[in-house]
Image (cartoon, rainbow, N blue to C red):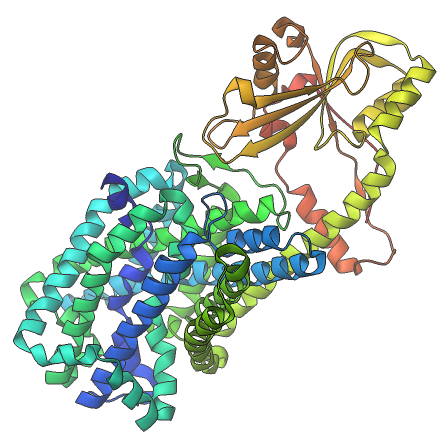
Length: 623
């Protein structure tokens, strides 16, 4: 229950605050094309209810949350899972990663617009109660957003623990406000029938097509909900949804529909006009807090997807801080937090109101939904042994509905919809450039590194002088030679008495016991002092190489004494990256890759290496 409440404070903020603006936006579209009569209102409510049911309850909560990658959710985790399932088909695996890149790029567009539109829509509620302070809406929203991004460093667990009880109150208020109107006009329950949606679409095809551009607002946050799965796990999220969030949203939308149907003027702001006058100011305050939490959902989702992108090699290494000792998904990424903050403040100041921002909203959301469905269809057969009819049904039901939403939102491109597309295009460019540049660097490094086994044989023949002490060379594997080791031999013509090549990996568990954390290899000769040690860290462990080496000695995994590392030297293989005119990548992308590489996280700081005993060596690499 405690975890479910904490999940409420992070996961459901986005989708939980959609009642603030979703129905209002429907009636504002195209100069009021959707009218406040029974057929239109019931048709819209039916579309909203069944969209939430099919896409959120069935697709995400019922199906996609079973497709996790070591407990992580989101489009990058799904793409990684698909890659693993199709690992024997290299071409298809590459295409799957590209699909994942497109999906996560669209999610970043959503992550920038959601905090701005959510906070603005809540603070704008002040206009209903205190019209004289309308000019303070932007400054108030800016202060709230600054506070939100500042508290990210404390971690989603603590933020969720603080926000969770507030969201419980928020959903209770949603249900109570809607229930009062539903009891007064119970006939509105007819709007839950899917027949009204069908009749609305076929009787008003052009109007319903426009309406889809706003109806999609009720499912914004579905991808964030999936991406945040690694923070809390699937069971708490499912329980919170079905026992509280879904019923509260449904009742509130029904209440707003009943209000508009019997008081058409209320369509200007049905959410706040649903609240009795005496309670509007407290609800504005509560809504403001809830929209801050809505922003939290996409921010924490962006952290999760960014870490997965780093692990998949489509983003450079970034500083990642683990904020929980128990949950591996609870992380903080300073660089991503800063970039999101700049983007959110920019779009908020540029658009200035939630009504104008709604024109930019929807395209990135629906695009991400379509990408998830495409990956779902691809993994369903190898993962769950789905037959063709079941895969076809999922593609038609989920994909058909989402493509309709996407088509309905394409009309927004000229009025602001280009913003999330521009953000997505920039992210795609960065990710594909880093991936391609990394491949070129690895190819060049592989040529220069050469075989480690052959290097050891050559060293034995040369009979190089050995100097006292221990030299540690962090390196991804034991097949190739660290460039720093080659450079040391080439320029100094000596080897340390003990040379240890260290490879680090992260296991999908909080902590790895010492008996499983170390794998030692003497690399074929027990007398030459050149050894390899593989170290496995848990996701809650700080990847501290010096401490791990001492622990390996205490555990008997390394034939040295812990005191031998007191004055050990650490050599990082890092050479300058030089751009060339070789084929493989255009010049401007080569320059972008070099800039990204220069701003990547420092490996010495990442692995806890002592600054005064760490040397960076190696040869230049070319792309």
